Length: 239
Length: 255
Image (cartoon, rainbow over all chains, first blue to last red; front, side, top):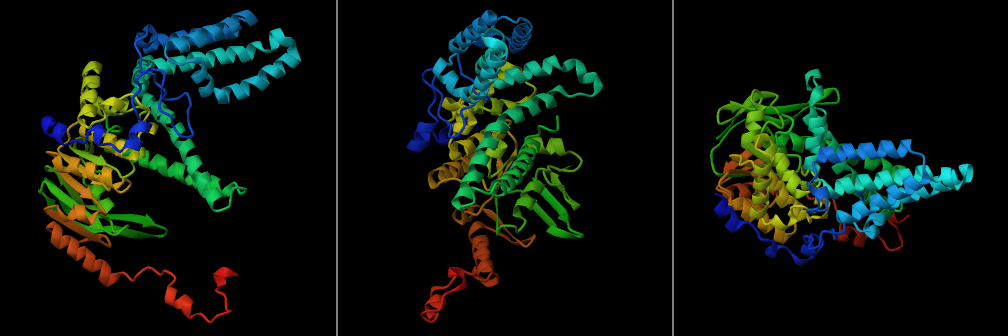
């Protein structure tokens, strides 16, 4: 059967040119295809072979936790600054150049700059901007983690980490799947938001939030139903 | 072999009930079966009965003798289902992970799962896209990936609910050819009458009942006749009428 399929299945060469361009496989690990409207951190795995890629996901999660706790506990501007530099280097090492990293974290940066400014104004430069740097270092470290770890490995680590709850009736597999669904839903919902907004603007209703918030909610619920159906059809609720 | 034994679907609607599918008895043994009919005729519901996504309100549905109500999980592992909206079906961030998720049911080691997922993707011409974010794929590639995810576990039957509705001509042909080449039994819900006419058996669903059942050509003819005879043409503003309006008068829409 496989040989028969291999012969008949469309090759990538049959794929229309335009679609090929948007989804060309990465030749260098650093170049990801552009996604309209969303270049977020979630679901961005950068294939690679660095030791960080090969390290067990559980270990990486533990190290991230340890680094976060340390950063919060140690109140030194120097340590925080060094942590940011180290985090950015780590991200670069796994394939996220500082430019790409900055683009991905644009939203977080927009929130962090006023936070740092507020702290500076209230507590002076040393104590004031330290929490913002801590946050930035943690976010960059987490981004490096998701960039170097395939989602299914992260899931497996979560399953192992919560396995001891199994006797209490907790299903680690379902928990992990829920996390995964959430990660996938973020870009999908943003795309829906864009579509609904476009539809409202096309009808001249951009000033009326109800004209896009209501259809957005309806579509989000519809999507949830469709996803549930798809999971059931693939037997994922049965196990 | 799929059998419907007086299966009906009735849902609550407001204070009363609404019949979506009247009691239907069928045996689907052909390797290729198509379901055609108007929007809302009940053909999707009929398709969903086949793998227990929808359970019959009365009667029963048997797949190789197993009841979808009693053995839902076993039936679903035999009957794969592909939706028209591939986006909703793809759960994982990348194609490789999505196919690996399907394979989880087979309880293989991780290495085996990954190898098998990569081979499946290669078979569907998606080998190069294994690690690309799903959002970056084209509509056709997404539908192909959805098919790969379902076929990775090698079900015996594949039910497809309008898999080509959202695709352009080129991808529609690619998916149709792929479906045609499968060794599995395929039950296809479609609005593409050209594709349906090539099927050895086509069921026409109308108002919650199977009203014609025959080879492709005869069923498609029956469906066309049904549409011509029963449905009045949609009310579109008619040029002759607007022309007939006396000069100077304006229609309400202009005011």
